[in-house]
Length: 395
Image 1 (cartoon, rainbow, N blue to C red):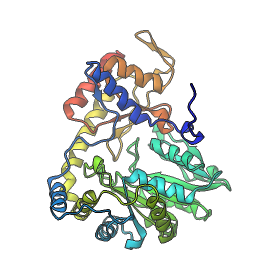
Image 2 (image 1 turned 180 degrees about the horizontal axis):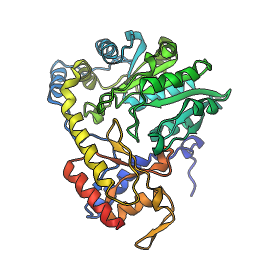
Image 3 (image 1 turned 120 degrees about the horizontal axis):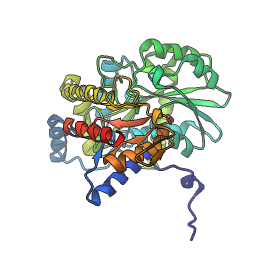
Image 4 (image 1 turned 45 degrees about the vertical axis):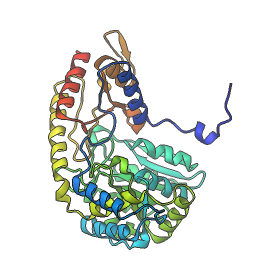
């Protein structure tokens, strides 16, 4: 029996990261000892100073609907953060707080994109970017890169991808899934191309901003000619270990912020009031208060890279941020491993899950079909055991 679902939902792919996590949970339910390296979720607890702020908000009886675009005190705190960390001058009327950075991105796409518009996605890109573009009835256009270029695109590639239909480009640095960070010089070179195309808006997703190793990220909106065309997206999930708190935000031209507030008012209204009050404390806190997590992630990164380089067929670079490695495993394509033919990254990821009991994510979902994503937002013990299992399963 067919069900009368909309073309919209039928055209939407299932999130590959969530699908792999669901598959891993299913196998765990069958009694298998699965190590999950598929989700981008810190394994740390939310810092105590943030939890204390949430408890205080509960005791102060914050339990009513919050303003659609966020509490003024939080928006003012976000303005302080933007100035302190990014050199960006936003006013509270340019800030919109949402239920996670994913909603922030969806709001922006919904208010700027029309049917037939094109969205440029430098690949690899986060899995939801393409789906969000599709939901907005736009067409996404991939700009490919590879591990040999540290997963960065060039100005020439950007220029070649632009057409009269191009309306937006999504940048993400530090990048999910590759961990790549664009330098200020690299962003300025890309901006020189975009200066010739004033109809194009830039969405700069900076959710992994504070998870960086010796390379400080640069905000695209800090380029003067780009400020009025850039929407800066950030949130608390990754750096503050607050994935379930669901707080994201944008800094944008006021007219875009107003449109996002209008959109959000018809979908979710304001973000959770307790999470918002705690977020004030989080964004105003010195970055040093979460440095212990970043230091641990760097240690884990170095362990993962060292262990993967011991496995023949893995090609690995050194990511500068986030908590992922994105090895090229195309050397296995066309080969059989213990009777299983590996045709692509999806086959490889499934083989690892079924034969090593380790969950990863295929690079196909990120626009990089030669790679798989491995998250090291897991304990060192789990990481070492997972890579050991992978090595055995491929030997």
